Image (tube, rainbow, N blue to C red):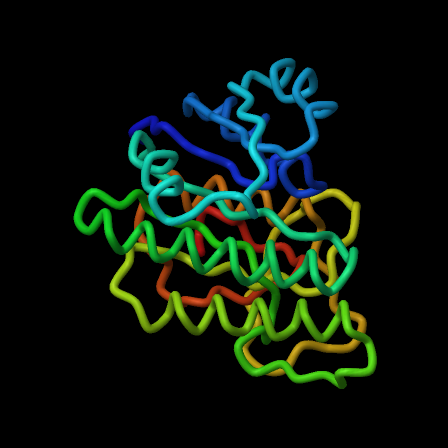
Length: 218
């Protein structure tokens, strides 16, 4: 497998804490972007080069400069259930600005791995919960925008995330069960596999849950 220069966005999150050490272990050169400087030392300890930036402050030109050096980009960023305003700014606006910059890069655009959730392109919810509504509509808009583009990308759709160990994967062939769970470590394993391949899986989006099949056989 060819080693790559990888940028992880949202590197302080719970999925990225599994992803970054696994990417490094595979021999990839990893740069990890976070907003909070308190996360820098852990990223360095994990073998990454830390970048401290606020995604919501970047325009398409800023994004293009940031993305150009990389072979692959992992979007694992999110407002994390904070205010609706923050969710729109990160999960929708920043992600769409990044996609626009990737399109401007054309054939030089790095491969994008977008972490979403199962059913995101069809999900609906009430506006009563402003933050959750912002999240659902943001992820839907971004995933649909990506699927309509010609960018090299892979969308990942795990079910409800847990902190259990990764024991294998099961691909969804229909609506997910209400009790469906996906370990965050498994999401990291799928990210690493996707980065290593550098091209989409047979399914895109790839919707999955915890199971027993090897990730390498997706």
